[in-house]
Image (cartoon, rainbow, N blue to C red; front, side, top):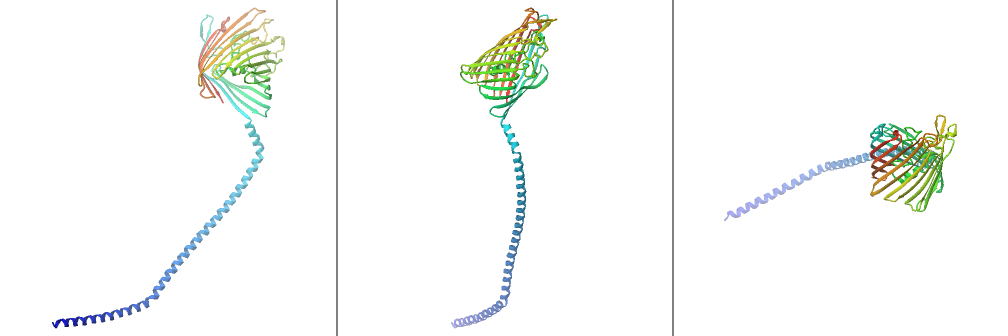
Length: 470
C-alpha cells in the first residue's frame, strides 16, 4: 500500500518538473521569437512598400501609355478631320461648280425636257408570212403557174409596211408630224424607204383644222379606220388591179392615194348626230412624188353619224393626177372619182359597204393612133362588202368580197372597147393577245377575167398576217 503514495509523489514531482521545464522552454521561445520579430519587421515593411510602389508605377505607366494612345488617336482624328474638311471643301467647290454648270445649262435642259414631253413617237408594222399560187391564162386558154402582176409563187415573208411617226406639239394650236414608210416585198426582192407624211398642223377649232404638207387624203384612211383590217388587205379604192391600155401589162394600180402633198382642211364632232369633213387641194402625184403640176387637184369627203355606231359618207376627186406638166395641155384629161360608204359597227360586230366610180383614172393622158388623138379613155366602178364578228374575247371572224369592172377604149370614138372584171375574196380568223398586237390566219382569192388574155389570172394566198403598234 505504501507504493501508491510513493508513486503519486514521484508522479507529482515529475509533473512539476515537466511544467517548470515547459514553462522555461516556452518563455525562452517567446523571447527568441520576439527578438526575431524585432530583427525581421523592418525588412518586411520595406518589401511591402516596394511592391506598392511598383504597382503604383505600373499603374502610372499604364495611364501614361493610355494617354499617349489617346493623344495619338486624337492627333489621327484631327488629321482625318482636317483631311475630311479639306475633301469636303473640295467637294463643296466641285458641287458649286457643277451647280453653276447646271444652272448655265438649265435653259437648254428645260428646252430639251419640254421638247421630249411635247413629242410623241409611234410605230405601225404590217407583215405576213404566206404561201401564194398565181396562175395565168396562156394563149391556149390553159392556166399555168407564173410569177407576174406583183405575185411570186411560193412561200415568203413580207414587211408590208413599217410606219415610224413623230408628232411634236409646239402649243395648243400648232403641231407637226413626220411619218416615214418602209416596206419589203419578197416578190420585188427589194426594200423602199420614203416619207409618207410631213406636215404642219394648226388646230383653230374642232371644226377647222389645217394641215400643210403631205397628209392623209380625205377618203382612203377614213375608210381604213372603219374597216379595221387594213393590215390584212387594202380597201377597194386603194387595192391595185391589173389591166388597162396605157398601163399595158403592168396594171391599173389603185384608184386613189392614201396621202398627198398640198393643203388639207378638216374638222367635225363625235358621238350621236355627229359629222366630219375634209377638203384637200393637192398636187395629184401622191406622197411618193412631191413634184409640182400645172393643176391643183381637189378631193373631199363628208360623213354623218345619226348614232355613233352608224356612219354614212360620200366623197369625190377631180383633177389631172399631176400629169398636166406636159407641154400640150390638150393631151391631158380630167380624172374624176366618186365614193360612198355605209358602215355599222359596235363592240362585237361590224358590217360595211363601199362603192366607187372613176373615169379616166388610168388613161389620164390621151393616147394616139398615129397622128389621131384618141378621145376616149377608161372608166371603172366597184363595190366592197365586208363584215367581222367578235365571237369571243380577243377572237374574231372576218370576211370580204370585192368586185371591180373596168372598161377602156383604144380607138377613135367608142371603138376598140375592152373590159376587165376583177373579183376578190378574203376570210380568216384574227386574234389580239394584247391591244398592241394582232394576228390573222386567213385566205385570199383574186381572179381577173378580160377580153385580152394577157389580163386573165387566178391567185390564191394563205398564211399568217400581223400588225404591231407601239
